[in-house]
Amino acid sequence: MRAITIPEPGGPEALVRAEVPDPQPAEGEVLIDVAATAVNRADLLQRQGFYDPPPGASPYPGLECSGRISAIGPGVHGWSVGDEVCALLAGGGYAEKVAVPAGQVLPVPTGMDLVTAAALPEVTCTVWSNVFMIAHLRPGETLLVHGGASGVGTMAIQLAKAVGARVAVTAGSPEKLARCAELGADILIDYREQDFVQEIRKATDGQGADVILDIIGAKYLQRNVKALAVSGRLAVIGLQGGVKAELNLAALMAKRAAITGAGLRARPLNEKAAIVAAVREHVWPLIVNGQVRPVVDRTLPLAEVAEAHRVVDAGMHVGKVVLTV
Image (cartoon, rainbow, N blue to C red):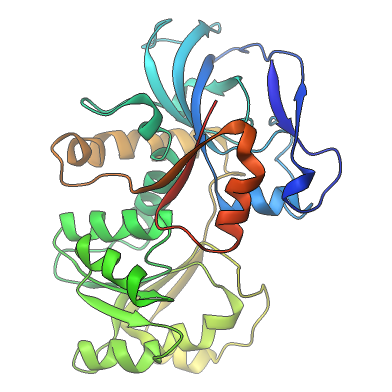
């Protein structure tokens, strides 16, 4: 099969299309003929040599895909050859075929085309696991989403609104904030021009955000704690602003607040399966009834993967960049 390989870390030009051996489904796995995949920031980090796949995972980038099941490994139940599916991956989405544990596979939602479904697994699993399973966002609470126009951000806005929460977002341009507003965001903060701590306090009568979904990390840590409400929860899912920062623990304790950090890629299979099952139960009905949808900025062929990485690297997109295989 053809796959995108990374012979040497580097810029977008480091992504090389090559012929590689076909994967085979092991026990508990299905083989998917890939129709589409999507670009995630983790793919950019892997390309640069900063984020190796976990042991045993495919060496090729790509943390999600859609396609059709072409083979079933031993011990798999509930799936059949020919089923149209999408899947959460530990790697290997930038290829014509990928083997994936059956517990990480989801049916393509009714009424959605196969290519668009590739934009769903990573964002739905990331948002549901962090905002709802870990941070326990409740109806009536306020969620602050950093990077509201990103793939994760656009999904977080919609899911939070669907459960009756109020949503604040940060983004870097009026155009991106306008797109967030179209998706239901209530409080719009231009991080280039405004202080998000002041703005979230102003919008909440001084209380702050009950939950913050953060992709920045160290750079925002102290300000995020200031922006939290009493009993607030900060969920860190990205480190675009660094990995180390000082924290005033007295400020954290005074608010009885909590900070969590979680990714998806390296989690044990049983944890990933539990997240995928929860997404199928709670999120898939919202997609089918039209309350929630993936936001796709553009679709490019896999042969133009370098351009797709340049787009995401430059932050030129709103939502997801999808690659057709």
